[in-house]
Length: 343
Image (cartoon, rainbow, N blue to C red):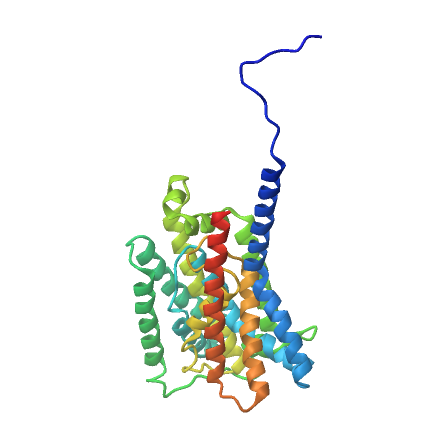
């Protein structure tokens, strides 16, 4: 059999050094992605281990149970914030909406559990819908729109409570109180509800067309529109969802405290944003996970609990540490993102 000649020129064998370089770059890219996704979890494990060895009262069932319950309210708010930030937006109104939801739930409990749950969802969902319509259809800046609804929700809250002079109570033994204070299999009901919501959020984000649209809008809004993604509808849905979850968290908190405390929620939006970003979600949108948000919430609560365990430190130190964590995470995210683009 004779050899066949071609005019394509000499055939050169692939350079093994190029293959090694590509494999090294791919490995480094995977490590960068893992660090960005699971870095907060590693820090949470380390902080928990150190605290368990340092404080006798930290690694106890009662302490863990208390942290889980108090984390659940922030976690529900942060879940809605995750969807908003994934689209490249921001929602500053969730703190006031959370407080408003609690007051509405406590007020509505006088007319039955159904009213106590549906009223805050309806009102707070409407506030989220208003945010979404103004941002998506009118193309207003999310910062300005949600700042305005923050003030509006807080004003409505003060109107309902006579400038904060009146506090509505949830009757002991009512169904609403049982939802907030009861437990099943030794785990408080707010924790079960939070876990169910995060599972649903993860499935929606990873396994549904809506989740694909959320990532697409956050990654590149113009490209998403060219591909046929419903950009306006997606934005409206995520802001409505954020309002609904903030209102639900407020209702659960009111059920847990047995009252609609009107001074709550101040600065909660910053805690929610911190938890989302610490959990690995990019502030610019397009990359993130709801599981990371849950880890970010737990990390913030563990830090707060450790400061309380020390005893001689003011609670304001928790804000200092949280701010430091947030700054470090944002710098790390920026560095990892640039490194992945270079690769």
